Amino acid sequence: MTPLLDLPVITLDGSATTLGELTAGGAALVVNVASRCGLTPQYAELEQLHRDLAGRGFTVIGFPCNQFMGQEPGSENEIAEFCSTTYGVTFPMSAKVEVNGADRDPIYATLAAAPDADGQAGDIAWNFEKFVIAPDGTVVARYRPGTKPSDPAVRAAVEAVLPT
Image 1: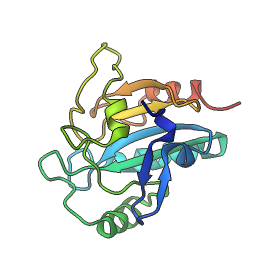
Image 2: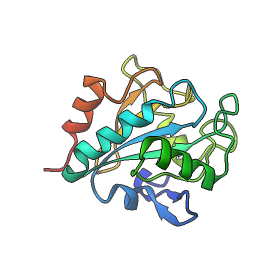
Image 3: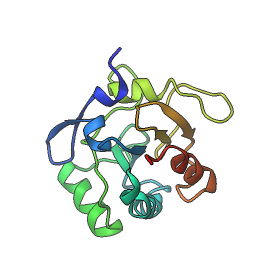
Image 4: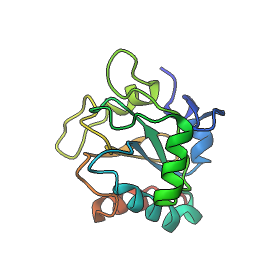
């Protein structure tokens, strides 16, 4: 199995990279996102967390997904425009991916195997499920969609793996 950080990512602008290049040797919060979801306002908190900790070797990485009630129907350009103009998003975003099923992106195949605080692993439940990734590519925490990025547990998990 390919290490998580070596897995490919196509960004919203069509550039090919890897998860490791997007994290630049730091910690990350990987989130499957959608523009037309009741949880979409979490973008504001994701951006705030990104801005607060970017100087310490941290990034949020958004993975748009249309698998949950068609809540991310737009093109990559429409997604980029929405995120930029509505929430001022500056963190990296991938092109749309599948997070569950036969066509699941390889990154999400790895992430889905990580358990949450209750020991539950498996399919992504909904938009805005969050994974804290250490600089070495280890998945250290999983938070279900209802857990906001501003939750103290999320911040503590991220800060625990920030590079020194």
